[in-house]
Structure formats: structure tokens, C-alpha cells
Amino acid sequence: MTASINLTNQNLKEGWIQKYKTAPQQLKKMAKVQGLISAFNANTDAVIKISGERIEELLKNHGLDEANLIRDGERQIRTKEDAMRGIIHCFRSGIAEEWLIEEEDVFNWLSEEIAYDKLQMGGQGGIVANVMAVCGVSPVYVHCASLPANQAGLFLDRENLISVDQNGKLQKAHSIDRRNDTPLVHWIIEFDKGDSLSCAGQTITCPKSNRFIATYDPLNFKLHIDEDFAEAMAVESDQVEIIVLSGYQMLRETLGDGSPGRERIDASLLTIDKWRSGKSGQLVHLEMASTQDKVMRKYLLDSLARRVDSLGFNERELIDLLEVMGEKDIAEICAVNTNSVNLFEGMLKLFSYTAVPRLQLHMFGLYLTIQKRDFMVGAEESRNGMQLAAVIAATKAGTGAIDSEEVLLWAKDRAVSDIGLQELKALSDHISKNFGANELPEKGIWANNEFELIAVPTILIDKPVTLVGMGDTISSISLVAAR
Ligand code: GLC
Picture (cartoon, rainbow, N blue to C red):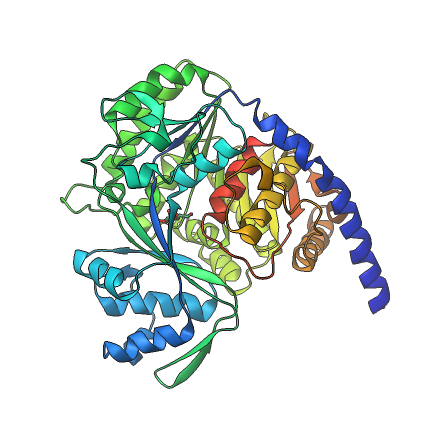
């Protein structure tokens, strides 16, 4: 019995290695994209790998009340205890979360006590822009709320990657120096699977390598839109095929100046409408990201999300969306058993709620796309795009950086993961029982009258060098390479 299951897995893996062979071809097709705008958030990420031992040391040195640090609470940082509570919360469950820092003091405390190993490009908008540029999309226009030289230097040194300078002129992003702009820095605190720490008399072991993000970012907190960029894009957008949106996740119901966060979403809608006006065939994707404020999450879902062509999210972000849609039961089921079957059911709810033509989930080991039958890209093209995304995401995880064309396909001949295949087979069984026969494990594609489901098991890297920005990389490549 076991032997035959293994054999099946082996056969499936060989089949997927064959399908994945389209990766180099898909990459070449990305250079044919006419132009892309990545907006709105770019920032500097201060990345640090933290050990269980170091966390314990911080708790002791600062005399923090340990019992408070293992309680559930608001996902927000007002004090240094909150910062440590966030780290422990993510460490304990091996999950990724981002909490916003309210107080500059806490930001300074983190800078002094935690410091960083390296600075890298951060923010969905910044990360997507670099990825698209290195994959050959030309031109890539990137919106930056702030762009001093330190931030600009994190953009790849490429002619096809453009932003606006201090005079409002389009220029190579890497060389811009808007020197009066405020630097925006986010702390990316990564931890390793298997590491442990003791807190309040408990031993806590980390089940999965992941990260906690502590963000202090006055401009992106209010989705600041650079007027020069907005105007330049209203002109250039004739040449733009794809718009990738992100950066809404930091908004709050009420902003620091007392104004409602929803006004910022409305303002961005006007800007985006200008970029889209009179153009057909442009594809707009929104990367949801982890939006903590429920009022903003709901408003985003009911305003912007309904107007885009494509929506990207991970498992947690999907659960969060289901919650604000009033789908508490399925949200709870997905949270307790976060697997492909439950998440697929959750995606169906989101699909009918938003009527967005394309939804994409990236979860551990598997990507799922649901798209309308008449979506502008076919199922096979979508699958091939998702496969390229899996290769490049694995390259990023394995090598730590995807800064040059030569490295992009580093992971291309690797086998897909057992976890991914298991999830895929479970989903296939579920669909056989509830919808009808399918060949998902072999083909990764199944369709009914209403939608196509594309499911791709991914390549997993055992000891990833980095995980941050993975979702942005996966979503943007899956979409843009699907052709
Ligand atoms: C969030 C974080 C940012 C990070 C990005 C990665 O936007 O604030 O620092 O680079 O996620 O996806």
C-alpha cells in the first residue's frame, strides 16, 4: 500500500517536472508586457533574524511582564511589551503577521535593542517593481511616497525601472534622490523552525520558519499619493498594460490626524480611474496583504476589491476577508484546519461576494487560482505563469535575492513538494465528491460552467534564506507571466 502511494507521488512529481519546463519560455514572455505600474507602497525593510535565546534575553533585560506576553490581545504596538508579544505570538504559531507601531518611542527602542542584519527593498509596491523589472517587464513605473537616496538605492540599477524625481520628472528609480523625503523603515523580524524559548514558565517551540513585521511608516499609514507620479501616470498609462495595487493594509478607520481612512481609499480610486480612463484591456490586480483594521478591510473589499480584475492573498488574509464578509463559520473552519479544501471553499464564497474575475491564493506548498471562464487569460497560461512564480519564489527562498536575470531560474529543475501534492490530492478528492471527476493532481486544471480552478503544487526550500516579500513575488509573477 505504502509503496503504491509513494509510486504515485513519484509519478506525479515527474509529471510536474515536465509541466514546469515551460518556465524559461514564460519568463521570456514577460518582456513582451507593454508596461506596468506598481503602486503605492515602497519602504526600507530592516531585516533581522532573531533566536529564541535572544528573545529571552530581551525579556529579562527589560523586565517585561511575561504573563502579558503570551496573552492574546490587540494586534497593534503601543508599547515595547506589545512588540515582544507580537514576536512571541508569531514565533509560537510559525505565522507571519504585521502590526503597526503607534509610538515613535517604540520604534526607537526597536532600533536600539534589536537593530538589523541588512536593509532591503520593502513594501509590496517596491518589491513587485524590482521583481517585474528583473523579469524583463519594460517599463516598470513605481510609486514612492518617499524616495531619498537610501531608499532609491534599494531599487535595482536598471533602465526599465522608473519613478519620479524631486522635479516631478520620470527617471531611473535607482538614481533618484528626493533628499527632503522622510525615510520609511519597517522591522522584519525572522525566526527559525525548531528554535525555542521559554516565557512565563512555558517552553515555546517554533513550528515553522516565519516572520513578524513591526511597521512605523507615517506616509504609507495614510496611503500618501505623490501628485507628480499620479499626473505622470495619467499621461503614460496609455502604454501600461498592467497595474498592480497594494499598500492599503496600513490604513486605519481613523487616521492620526482624525480624518477617516476611507477617504484615502476614495482618493486612490480617483487616481486609479484617471490611469484607467479610456483604456480597455488593462489588467488591475490588488494584493490584499494583512489588513488589521476590520472597518478598513471591509471597506476595501466593498469598494476597491470589487473593481479590480484580480485579487491576491495568502491563507490568513483570506480568513480575514471571510470574517468581514460575515462568513464566520467558514472563516473559523479555515483557521482551525488551514488546508486546501477549506480554503478553496472560502475562495468560492469570496468569488461570489466580490465577483472579481480572478482570485489567487498562495499557501504553503500550493497556489490556487479561481478565474471566470471568460477571463482574458486561459487556464493553461495561468498554470504556466504560476509555475514560473513557484520557480522564482523558490530561487528567492534558496538564494536570498533575485537581483539578476542569471539567477532567476536557479530552482527550475527541482521537484514539487510532498506537502503541495498532498494538499492537491485532498482538494481533488473533495472536488470529485462535491462537483465531479477531475484530473487536478495530474493537470492542475479543472473547470465547471462558471469558473476554472488552477492548482499548482510548489517547490519548497528546506532552509529558506528569506521569506519576506514572497507573496508579492508569487502574485505578480503568476499574473504577469500568464500569457
Ligand atoms: C509589508 C511590510 C513590508 C514588507 C512587505 C512584504 O508591506 O510592511 O515591510 O516588505 O510586507 O510583503
